Length: 177
Ligand SMILES: [Zn+2]
Image 1 (cartoon, protein in one colour):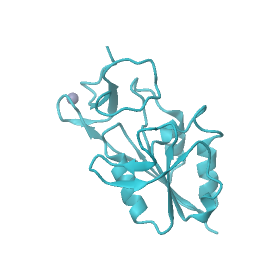
Image 2 (cartoon, helix red, strand yellow):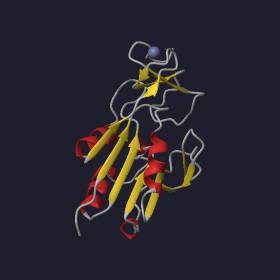
Image 3 (cartoon, helix red, strand yellow):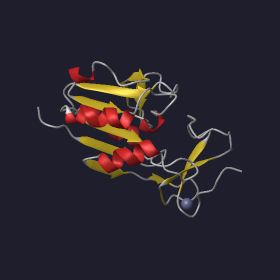
Image 4 (cartoon, helix red, strand yellow):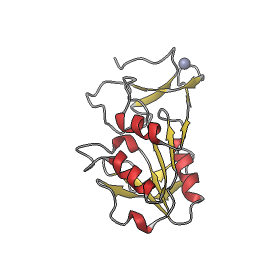
C-alpha cells in the first residue's frame, strides 16, 4: 500500500479551520472524524462557525479501527496531549500515514501566550501540505494570526468561544489582564 498524505490546517481561533476540515471530510470516500474528548463543547461533532457540522468520535487514544477508513480528519489537534491523550498523537498520525491513510489535522499553532503548541509544530514539520489560516482581528479587522484571551483563567488548555477568546493582529495582541 502506498503512503498516505498529511494535510495540516493551522492558525488562530476564528480562522475557519473547522470549516476546512468539514469540507475535506465531505470529499473523502470513507472518513472517520475525530475530536479530542477534552473538548466538551464539540458534543461529538465538528462544528464550523458557518453553521455546518459533521459527526465526530471523541478520542483519548488512537482508534483501533483507524485502518478500516481511507481518510481521518482530526479537529483541535493541539488538545491531543497528556493527560487528555494516551500516547504520542504525532507518532500515531505519522504511522497511520505510512500505512496509507490520508489525514487532515487542524489545530491552533500557538496558544494565547503566542507560544507554540509542540504537537502542531511537529505535525507541520512532517506534513505533506500545511495551510496557515488567518482570522480577522477583533480590534481592527486586519488579518490576525494570534489568539488572545480576554481574561486570565490559569489554564493554557481551555475550550471557549468568543466569550473567552479573540483573534488579534500583531499590533493588537495582548496577554489577558
Ligand atoms: Zn488589529
